[in-house]
Image (tube, rainbow, N blue to C red; front, side):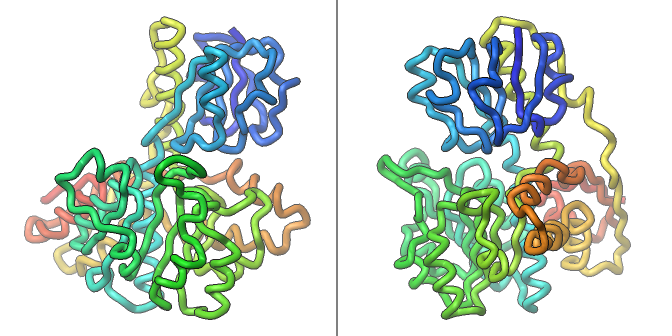
Length: 380
């Protein structure tokens, strides 16, 4: 079989080698003419998979190494009888770790304690639920708004939209839906923005169009103390430079870009393709992952708990580095290419559970918090 894959899907050639010939391409530029006789197409969020791309092609299976599905015409795939798989949850841990890093940076920069704040989580699926777990481990009060989840899990204490908007910090983790019972396109609209505190912290790691960017810019012009942390943007890679200037932290759609998460997505697609074509899987991601750059940290009983948490998180992932690199977009001759290259050549980033943290026995409370964040903890 011939397989076309986005060049940014890690280890894809190694993973799929036993299934056929793998050809990698830039996903944003992929066209119908590139498909040739390929039977399997593996993409990321930058490729729109629809009738225009697939009409009269030999494609029998499409896989996306992403959580979001707004770039996939699922109805067309079903109509054509084309197999499909996504990778739900593959990068959820990394995205949740991104939120933790962002909040710790903002708390330090603005001089407040997260323990004194209430966090509103809009969307409590794969990513939102992990954010909730990590914030709960840090003893941070959370409000959760998710109507679809509420219908399925009425035992959980959900709140309505009006209540979640009262939070000091609001983080968005919803799919992009323009239709249906719960549309999320421009969920954060002009009217919603007016209900937020003038000093709210607003984080978006889902999709750019969840926020009405024009309304957000107008709001920031009136209330410049509002803190905005954006990883996703409307019209990527042609993002609005003015919004980047006014964002407190801005990153190039990399919240979920840990190596662990991306390879997890590759493995999920590989398993789905093997199942669809009734092949026995022979590749496992753990066979190919390199050793993490940071393996162990050790703290004495003299370390302040908050300092230890901040040190551990920043050692694994410091959002300020990605913010600094995206800020150079203003000097780029071709900003769109610069944005895409930041993603294409993103440095290796590993997740918290790659790091073992050694603590003295008397630091049991700190150990509980670090374990809740995802670190391996040893009391000695």
